[in-house]
Length: 194
Image 1 (cartoon, rainbow, N blue to C red):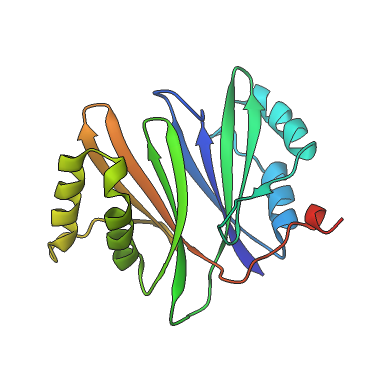
Image 2 (spheres, one colour; image 1 turned 90 degrees about the vertical axis):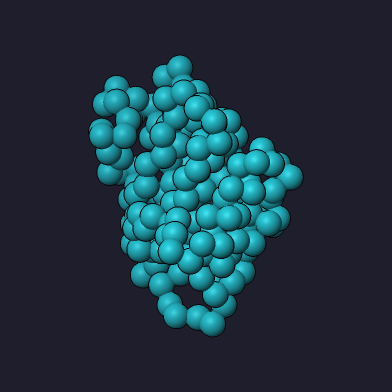
């Protein structure tokens, strides 16, 4: 059995955008997706939209994200909105080097990347260093100084193998980074074999 994390962004854009996390154990990505669709939570989506999401999901298949290992994405219509769902195969075994998937959300945009390292905090340092030019300079300098302060614990553990880092640049501009411990060996989605 593997563990899959579904990181659901609904609605996908706008001021009401929220992230929801669902973790499932399954043998494959296909089985995990089927299980999620069978058990979509009314606490995330209104009841009248669940049927529409299921219909949309059964007519499509998640797309493996380019240059990322074991990360898929799919979009589903939800009435006048849509949802972006990222599916990540989680690592459940001890390894000397881990691969962490970063899903950074800022100003209604998502940016995905992966970094190899020994722990999520060191990888967050690397992520900040690599992405400073894309965000407000003063805010990124503040983040770097916070990360260098050993008494500051910036990562909030959400679930086994997934963490959240949140920083508010300005009143309405929040950087949220979800970090997931990802399986290193690529899994194929069954439709890719056909």
